[in-house]
Image 1 (tube, helix red, strand yellow):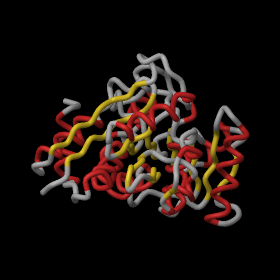
Image 2 (cartoon, rainbow, N blue to C red):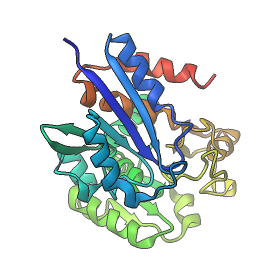
Image 3 (tube, helix red, strand yellow):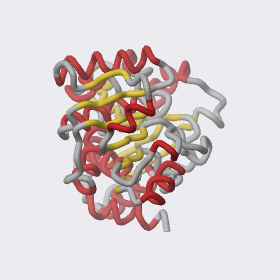
Image 4 (cartoon, rainbow, N blue to C red):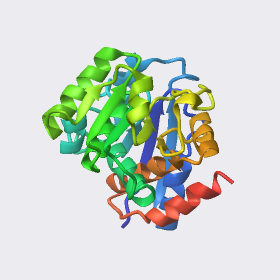
Length: 282
């Protein structure tokens, strides 16, 4: 008998999320009873401090697991019983599985970004890359970039301490000199092969761009993790110059593929989920 899955997403301002439809349609295609619910902190008028209560409630309602998004990916760490090796190394969790009375944290963002990168930007130069953002998603993307061969990653964040913490974590895993705290954005951009945005800047509710168009140039490749809208201001600016780009839909889909497998124990059809995602954006 195939498992029943009750999953959810905890985050702030997530009403536009495509994740529930991605999971439920793949569940339908596989003949699963698969329900996926949004737990949005904003309309519930809750903050990250509500996480302990929300986890207890999900367990008592027999949720199979939860996805975790901004601003909870690091705040949830102390509330978990165990972490996958990847989540422990990254220091952020976006998927929690409830199993045998335990809360197990995973990170599928890293794999999700890497898969999209390999499929779309596999042949790009990667000597120097600028990354905007050092939060939970930024930590996963930074690990993916270094694992994919980026030689030097300059990380910029409004919170310098957060950038430093991420760089220290990356140095432990990848060695000295591969990651640095960014200081002069204009200089870093002038020397960069690529730019990745892992901040919420560019979302429908947070319009704008993390990097002014004047710092972009045609030779640069630009990757984004925001996917609502699919074409952010940053991608629009980059494409106007002729840059190669990677939209945030790729990470959204491929992290969901892995999360689906963790929740259901069934192998997801990545191409089917990608095709479904694309129909939601036409």
